[in-house]
Image: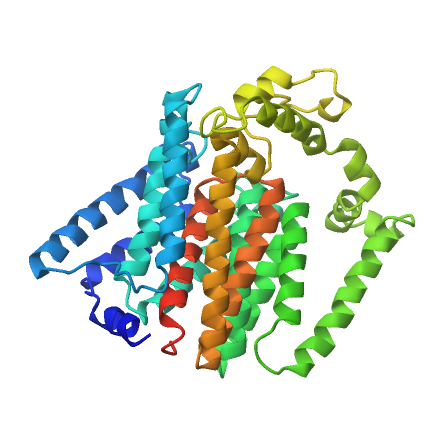
Length: 445
């Protein structure tokens, strides 16, 4: 333990322009202006790769100039999940060689922040955050993401209420801010939410009010996106957060448990009675009432029609799949245009099965899916071990927030796929988790 602590203390600290470059990356989800960010995910990913490449070049030059020793030692507490992440990346690149469309697997499409090239930069970004950020600088990282999320929420609210119509694309229902899709917008905010709540619990004075208001703002924005998969992820995260809260707080559980019961009762009412008049007269409430109907979800949700195609495709190529990001190939092969679940939709053909885990299994086979879950398992185990050995309440709460955010993301991705904003916040979470695994047991931030 002492050797790992000494390695952390002796790690080289890069000058402030490195942090400035990272902050520039964290605000990229707000940029969607034509023509430089059209499509938004393409422009955001392009600028992201460019900034990361410059940062890595100067980081390596700095390390060589200073004569740095091995950056990740054999005693590094985060070594196991880091190696698991690299092994997962290795499986993805192995699947590239058997891909049915290797060009698409490597480069992706302008309409998504996809492609193994960009994915490799996400991994390098997460490792760079872990290796080169000082412990105190993580506050700046999360506060920048909070600022990005706040600005996106204000844009989304403006879309919903038709404000600044000359500048913003109107979206009276299910706003998407600058993310191009309500699902990505909701997932981005849902990962930030546990950290905003923990920052609220740790703060004092005016900062407690600020972080409390931020948490409520994020909750409201998630609500107006009407994204059911994210609702499920937030519910799972809330249960975990309350039931496994790492400090005595009876008041939290006394307040939270009745709220869970109330939410469950509302779900029962939505599925058993007709909507009251005030619900029908309010656009948001009426849409939520309709979208939370389990009967309608079961009968009309196109995902449930698409997932059997994915199961068939996995059985055809179980080992390494069709190649990363090639879900469109088996979907186009198995798609049934007569399916009632796709009737009346503007698009019947998909380039993803709207389930991140099925997309992994199709792109990199069951080997890739196993490698991904092995990485997640080792990451969770590392956080759990760090939580057990943490010496300070602040470190405990930070780890608990990271675990909650990871759970929220993993549950939400059962019904979604990634774009630039969701990839970005996930890999920031990965880098932060590496930091917590290595640093939290010895120190308080």
